[in-house]
Length: 122
Image 1 (cartoon, rainbow, N blue to C red):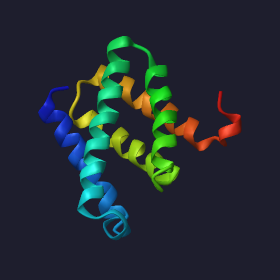
Image 2: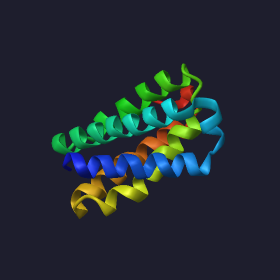
Image 3: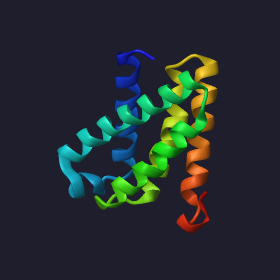
């Protein structure tokens, strides 16, 4: 993925989140939206690293760490899951098939992991 593809994916995903949850504008404002775009760049960077290493665990470890950070900042796990689900839909439009399939697999597994109670994750 090049920078332009990443920016388009991050922007499309953030737009979808803020359209679906307009209360986020009230809660977090423009700064929150900008952070959502930046967060999606980080998600994509970690997905790309996992792809290059052919190791989904890289992204799963990141997802668990991300949840810890964002929950401490009053962002619910459900919003992280929603974000990942939106990425699953957007990524294939901007990447080649093998990479999109791998990244969708990472995102799907991360969603399944984050849906588990913390004490059941290992």
